[in-house]
Amino acid sequence: MNKMNDIEVIINNKRYNLLGYESEEYLHKIASYINNKYSEFKKKDFYKMLDSEMKSILLEINIADDYFKIRNQIKDLETENENSSKEIFNLKHELISIQTKLEAKEKEVQSLKDELNEAQKKIIRLETELTDKNRL
Image (cartoon, rainbow, N blue to C red; front, side, top):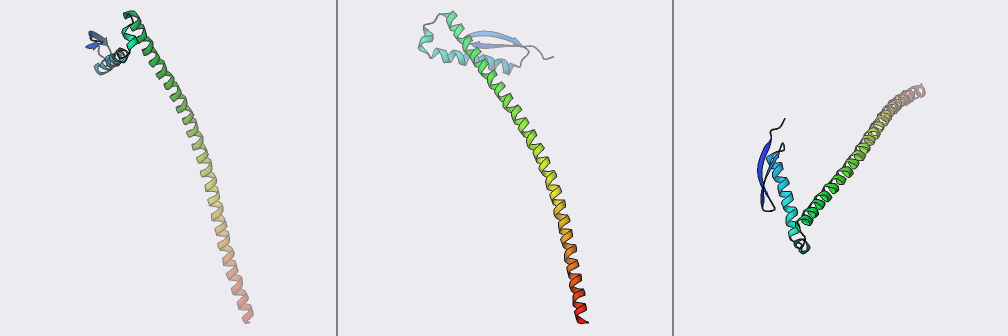
């Protein structure tokens, strides 16, 4: 099991101790994300007029919104990935089918070349026989 990490972070100009099994880097990313959210809202005029509870609710709603949007993007990407995998499977199947047909046609071409070669030999033999008979 991972070791427990206890780190100090600053969120919205206040010190907090975060404790978790995630890496310190990850815990810092979380704190940074929340700080960025606070920074976004502090730039808005309406945010300054809200009481602290409303500010917290607004922040929570926006974080939840980000979460659900990312979750939907992940679902869309998973669906796209699944569709791509199916398409790749179908293309591979089609490729194998085409390769099989190509091999059969190549064998047919080789057989026809062999037939042509034999026919040309026969023509030469018959011409030679005909020339020999005409000499007699």
